[in-house]
Image 1 (cartoon, protein in one colour):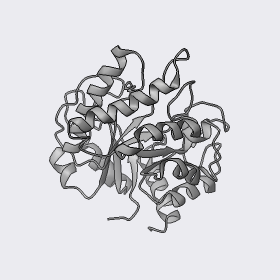
Image 2 (cartoon, helix red, strand yellow):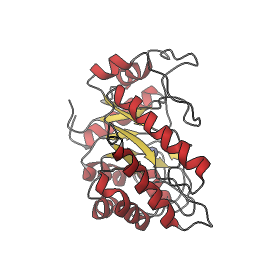
Image 3 (tube, rainbow, N blue to C red):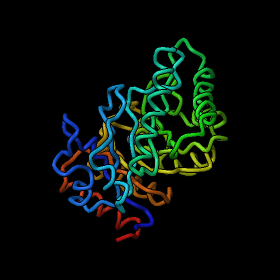
Length: 272
Ligand SMILES: [Zn+2]
């Protein structure tokens, strides 16, 4: 297995009736010559518990590194009970389903609180999420918190927020996902981002290597192909090298263009 698996986000890879869509994620990985895939377990905009996957055994047995992305609707930081409580529940349910397919980690966005809220309440809600789960034996796989692109009172947009978040969740062995498009949108210096993050989290578990359609600091979350965005390609590749961990591409494009991107990153990481 590659020391630094390079994967591609492929969505659920399922049809409406929970069958494999055109062979499913493993077929996509083979098509793109990727070492990894990132999948959704269901509708990323929905709250439904994931169904058992028809490819669960194959994913478990595969050498392909599998990462799961939790639904976008989850916000465990929220001060609104009607969002926070189902978010926690759904997070736990998704984590179990992710572990059942042998995923190496589950990515979840840092979330946010409302403008009127004290961000401290959001960081504390994150702490409680881990603390309650620890009471139930902990998450069955690493939970990887991703930095986000925009919005006020976000829990993982600014480096200062990530630092406060880690004061709250670091003791629970939380993992970190560095998304280069989001970091760029939030105005981070990508030349130092890996060191800057490690200085507060002590770790980076996964890189979402994406270019951006918008200028630095835009706050906009519009991913671009690696070679066709506002972020200089070499800066992106240097992040991947410095992070020294698995990479997942969440770039727009077809199988052929993703195969080219996988090869490009593989070469840059000296894995070719
Ligand atoms: Zn991402």
